[in-house]
Length: 310
Image (cartoon, rainbow, N blue to C red; front, side, top):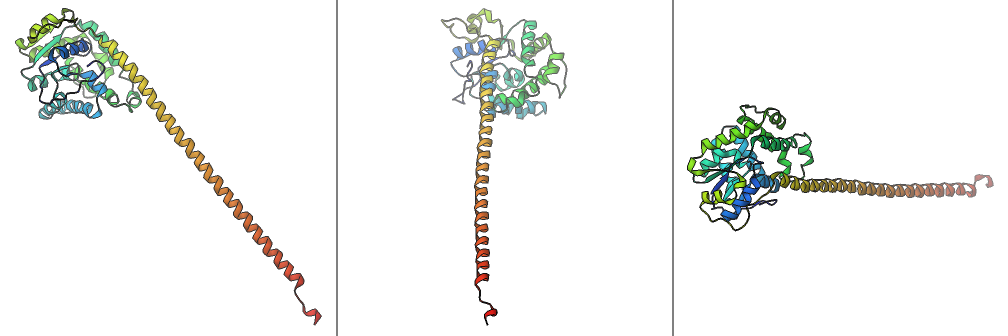
């Protein structure tokens, strides 16, 4: 977890705990806590999307497409594929597929981390605004995972706006910023409560620490502080690293293309120079041959015998 995606190695393991909170509700801290308590790989959506291969990212995008098309079985199949082998999940996309997660893992316990809705909206709207530029997809195109970020922003915006009562198949992050608000988090929490039996749901504040979570899961309290990770700072730090990677990739591409063009021109000029030399030599040889032939002809004419002597 953290800045590196957990990769399942045992597909027989099933999701035991679903952290149902939206992004920027302490999802990184909860992932680290669950990893400690469950002793297995935790699917933190943001980390997975930004660090896994394209195939994994496309699995989630196809799940969104299948759900929007009303294909429940295909949606379940894709969500299962994306979550197989994990013992816990947190963040989007899993938290955006709560109905499917509950159906796939009916025995899983669900944790809903509470956060002030206004503070949450201020944070999430700032994050969303970063994904609105139309050129983002082009700039990130060379980077696996990140190249799909703009597309994820689109499908996430449509899904989130439905919680606000706006079902627009063409909704964009700009529309989310315009029509969204604190009420979206409240609507999401209400939806989670409607899907999960009370005895399988824990609502907690991260400042409560290990006690309520460990009691809920029936595990011992670790002899260490509860993880305190700042989602925004963690995302910004990782984004800075990716930005540097993007710049290096584009620099490599530009210098690589430039080098190819440069050496291509040199090679072309070299060939042209060789061809020019050959043409010059041929012209010279042809000129010399003509001169020699003409000279021989003239010389023969002067010495040739004539009938005047006869």
